[in-house]
Image (cartoon, rainbow, N blue to C red; front, top):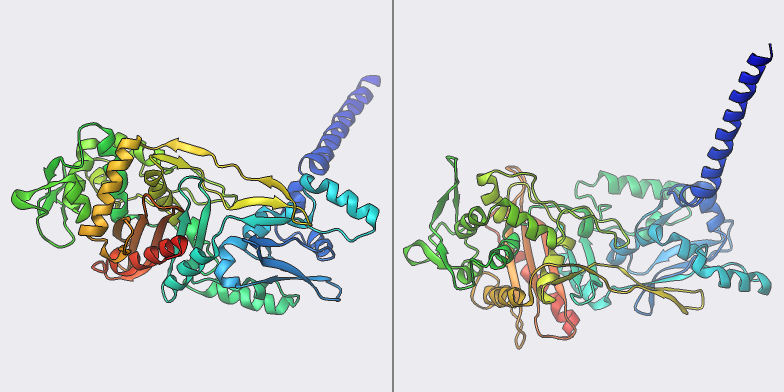
Length: 481
């Protein structure tokens, strides 16, 4: 009789311990996670009774809280909402939060451990609790130049300071107005959100860091970097550049965009092949280097790595185990290679920064309610993507693209601009994607830019026509020219 009772007692004891462990995990370990989940209405209502801190671009708040006198005491308002939406995201009574409003929520609500002294001071002073401020790395002029350039197009722009990784611009088109999602009218919020969800151009998609597209000929920068790093090629190496290139073990051929041979006798230097964006030369080069070399170089430049800036970016990818024909296609930015605007701006940044790629970031400083600096982001290296010598050689090759090749629309009087065009087809029924990546070497301040236009139309429409003028405008905004 005692044995069954002991067994029941043992089982009940185990269940009690399991219950206590579960409660401890939920209330202690996972408490912050549950609290910070988007759509947690109880927490949202509580947060509307405290002044949420601002999100700053320079000294200007692009997101701030305004007192209403209503039951929901504060209303979130956004200056130039569509301009900064990819950065701020939105803060909604119905749909929770996105962007920096979500990732920096504990700072903005004042609940971060960094603000514990401020909370104590507010308590003893009898003041209502206030949130801290988040200072972004965004340059207002660069952001505006990119936004204006994208009007009427579907695409994105990312600009990075190569020496630090600071993101100076992150822009998308179409965008949305976060003010309409932060109102206190649930019906109005739902109606606007439904219209955004129904829009085939997907304005809620954070295109600069999430939209993945074949990078087209901008990927030739990665292929060229791998060629230089192999020690087998220099900018003046002569390689085949015929009108068509027969893919190995295949009946298919690669053709040049203009249908012509890339040089006399079907030969061309590596420098000239990049300048005129010779498909056949780079397809041949991809097979000569091989999949392993291309993959290694791509990964040194950020492919196949997930970045948090602190917004989580989609992982740009290099194809898995491509065969010889697929490797040739990959070398010219086709087949299954995919990249975000952020990724291609990082490729340009690595070249511009003497071969060193810095981790990209969007938050410069965390500040208290009085705007005193509590924390500053320190730049950090991701990888040494190439040697300073090879970076210098590739920079000169990119300058040649702008001065004598396909990137003429990026020219700026009195400034050396290094650039690369790109065009890619995403499917038989889809418009081409036009690209341009660029930076201005030997300037201060310095900026690397990637522009993606997703609705370029026919494949014949080039990155030089649609994307290069936008990159040029962003560089000019940074250089104040």
